[in-house]
Image (cartoon, rainbow, N blue to C red; front, side):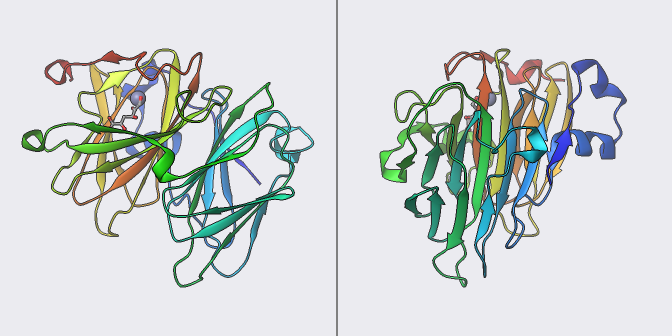
Length: 277
Ligand SMILES: O=C(O)C(=O)C[C@H](O)C(=O)CO
Ligand SMILES: [Zn+2]
């Protein structure tokens, strides 16, 4: 089973009700217990999803829903562990992932089996996958191996640590980029200043939030913004025409994934906050 989201163009944004906006751009509860949830978006054909294997092993790999022998027959995937220690078996290879480790899974992998080391502290696997036409070996990228960027300012409440995992300078891929951003204690704003990247789409999943907190995620064209109220474990889809930024009512972190024409992280057009409407 795979859900399909068709996305919407920028001209639609002013006409969507809250529920329509949410069902188009928000994916709630990405981490079901003991089963995988996968969503296929026609925004650059990214597949994203997750699972929290608590008492049983979760297996994915069948490609029936997308018309290929296996899910990754013509795709690559990044899997971030956002929970306790876990193991991923990719065909005959086995990888142990600690919290905030990421596994790159190359095209052609037939079967992925995901499990937790301890049901009392389950792993939480977040996956994003995009089409690929090259064979790149599977590879574990630990938090320590990621490329760290310290961003923002405490006085602007947007201090944060951005870690690049699937990125040309860290671990190569065909067209997937993936990283994790952690907000500093007391900071609330992510992705400041906001930006657009005409040549790439992006997806965020917010995690490490308390149940009662929300991230007020801002999206839309800079001259016509909308907001999505986002809970722990919810993902948002950001088409190339949309800004993506947010502020939390409590601590949070997020995984960002991108695909499109290039892997140039700096190929962005910053949008001055003062111009947002
Ligand atoms: O806090 C940030 O800034 C981000 O994490 C930004 C994302 O990485 C992004 O939007 C990349 O285009
Ligand atoms: Zn971005």
